Length: 130
Length: 374
Image (cartoon, rainbow over all chains, first blue to last red; front, side):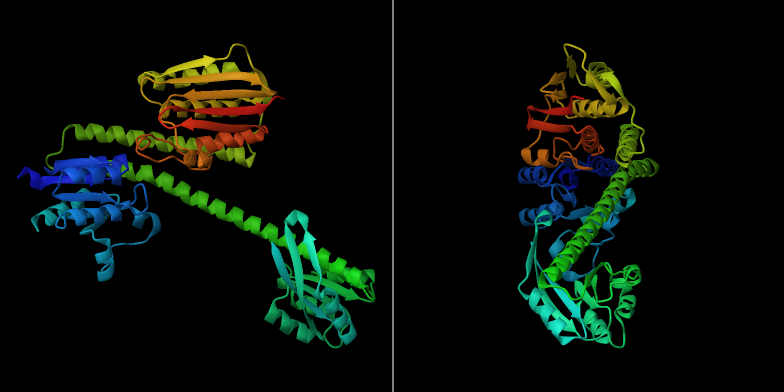
């Protein structure tokens, strides 16, 4: 079913958006893109993708978290991958095993930027099979 | 700002200690230029040993130190507190104001002398002078710290700005290397095109940085000579013409007569190129850019008006800072270093001139660069 393979990509960086799109299209997924949290929310109100890939920092430092929260409220079963350049920029890691932090973050998978094609493909495939 | 400074008075004569404490107890002094009002709390010590212990304990701001003490002398105390001379001002109190003593004590970090016997007025004058010195030293330290902080921030932002295009290019290259199975044949071409755009952006950043450091460090030898600004403006417009034409943007120059001014040619070229390239970059397709160059109200004025995306008042306020880029949906596809306008502002400063902007979102912006008519 085509609708099962539609992925929403939200990132304010044009190149990251392009790259994630190319990777996912290359693996046969349909993609819809948005360049901001607001634009992402707008799309989510009229269509339900099968997975979302969000950048963490957009208009605000935590746009990705907020959008992730919105998604889980609208579609609790929609898997979310959160991309973050924060590790590279600050040395901070959100890839924590701490259960409380994981609940708070809500994303199903967190991946570091720059995104590696294989890693992204594997994460998407795993979440869509589940 | 109101400050209360700790004063430690060391004298072996009790009468001196008490008299000094009394004279300072209700003394308040004002420093207009530093916007400071200072009052004092006083503690006393009768010996050198007691003084050293109290310095550790109360960390005084000002030490009034008797030269002649039983046991450990005033000079011995000074020798032991060498490492504190930056935070604490020491005034030596002495009845034997010989030149030799003065030199020795000054070498050991004493700031001033007060000769015994002294009146309460003389004491207060000495304390006021010491306070002034202390406040100046602290202000200088604060400024140095601020400068270090700004420099550090600048470097960390710069590192981030240089890393971003590198990451993008690297990602495009790895994407080309590990092509997904059903990759679009155009993917390759598109990746190369975007990688080149990012590399050009990085080069622009590096060039802007070179311009900026040259101007800031003052190492660029300025060649001030008379130039016709309209001729420089015309040349700068020709440089931007291909980029403008590609998007149907019209460039026009409104300069009815030559505007000769004594300037450094390179600096004015940097200004014109930055203002014009911004006016093109942030314009809409089929828009226009108008450059006016004239002598007005005792100043030389270069005005660049565009019909672009404009910006909100809150963005205008911070526009001329280092690495400031107005980031929103309208600008996300536009490359820029965030150094161009801060450099323009620095150049204006070199001439005692200024740069200003008025802007309306979705209508356009007008940048005005003016130099006092030399």
